[in-house]
Length: 246
Image (cartoon, rainbow, N blue to C red):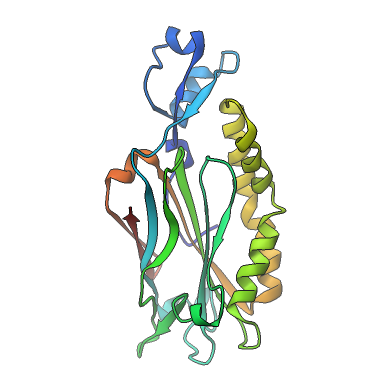
């Protein structure tokens, strides 16, 4: 479970179609929570996922992890052990989850947190998580902070997590969305179940590569919120900002 979370998958949205939608007046974009309840007694109702009106992306900024978080990451204040950022994201457009992080030695500083005199780790630059694009239904973002010995390059961790991601349940379900002529609440439920299992599937890879890591943040951003420019989120002696890009 992430230390900090915001948003909800049930607020991702779609438009229902077919006779049942006409009968129940479902003629506009509705959140999954509403569609699930209204369509529960009906035959599968075809859905068309909502999309952002214009291309939109998300950057991670102002990450903060204070010294009190040593209860979760014991060596967070040790300057000889760098702390790196790794993230992944997905929407319901098909494909993913997409992993972002350091790709080579030149990227390592950008994708790491500085350590100040009072033991607080903080980010010094905005990190591009979701590239601007037409987002489908919503965007889900997960951020992990991790440490390891200098012998393990940050790019290796990014690559191995990316390879493991290709074999997850969520990757399989999202790939199915590419070829489906339509979808329903059944598919929405399959994505929910696979997303819930994702952290457990990736954890063994992180444990094998890292001396320590923290499941730091999960953000779920329905397409309706992309009129907003920024979200500030705080947690246990920690915090971050998410900024919309275009």
